[in-house]
Image 1: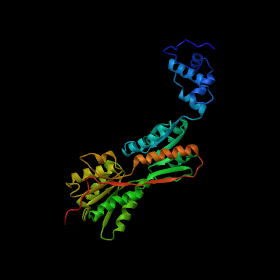
Image 2: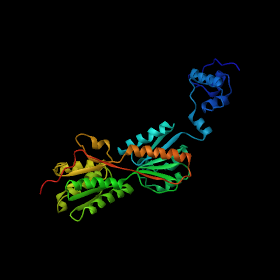
Image 3: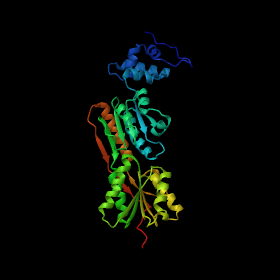
Image 4: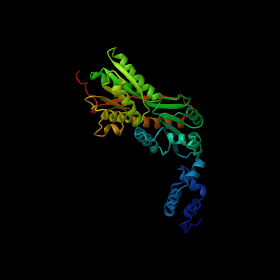
Length: 347
C-alpha cells in the first residue's frame, strides 16, 4: 500500500483512515496501536506513530470510549464548592486518579438541588467509570440508584451505609474530643459548641459532649445550632456570647468548622471580646482560613488530602472488584495549635 502525501485541510481534521494511508497499514491496525495492543510489530507501530505525529492526529475520546466501554472519567459530586475544605480533598483525589489515567468531572450538589437537576441521571448520561461523593449528600436515594450501576465511594462523610459503597472519612468524634480536651486542659470550665449538620455534625457534637462528661460535673457546656457557614457561625456566636442570654458567658468555644469559626471571630470582635484573652476559639478542618495570619485559628486537622487519596484508592479497587463488601476507613485527626486559645482570665 502506498503512503499518502495528502495533508488534511484546515477545516477537515485528520482521521484514522488518513493515518492508516500515511502509515501504509489498515485502520484496524491503527486502532490496535492506539489501544496499546502488544499484537503489533515494532516496525508497524513506529510507522503508525510517525504518521500520527506528521498529520497531527488526535484520537476521538468519545469514539474510543464506545469501543473500550470506558470514558476514563470519574464523577465527583461536591456538597458545596464554597467550602475551602474540598480543595485539599480534591487534590488528594486527583493525585491518584490522574496517575491512573482518570480525569475528574465535578458537580456542585448545592447548585444541582437549586436547579432541580438529578446528579444520578447526569453522571449516568456522561458514562463516567465511577463516582466519588465528597461531603454530605441529602439525596441518599439517588446515591443508592447510582451505586447499583457504578463503582461509588463516599469521602468525608459517614453515610449513608449502602452495599458496595466504600466510606472514607475523618474520625470526627475523636477530633472534637481533641479540641474540647485542649480547652479544658487550659483551665476553661464554661464551654460552648457551635454545632453543624448531618452525620459529621452529629459526630463532632458527640465528641464535644463526651469530653465534657469525662471531666466531671465542674464544667458547664452549651450547644448552639449552626449551618456550617460564616453567617451561621456569626449568628450562633452572638447568641452564645451576648450578655442578654443571662448567666455567665462561655470563655471557650469550639466551632463545627473553620468557616463557622471565622464567623465566631467576627461576633466576638463586635461584642468587644478579644481572642484569645477573653475567648478561646478552636475550629475544625484546618483549611487555609485557619492559617491566615490575622486569624491564626487553632483547628483540628482532619487530613483532608489523605481522605481524598484513600477515597481514590478505594474507587480504583472497586472498579477492579465491583462486588466486594463495603469498607469504612477513618483517618486519625490532629489538633493544630496556633494563636486563638489561652487560659481563661483570672476571676
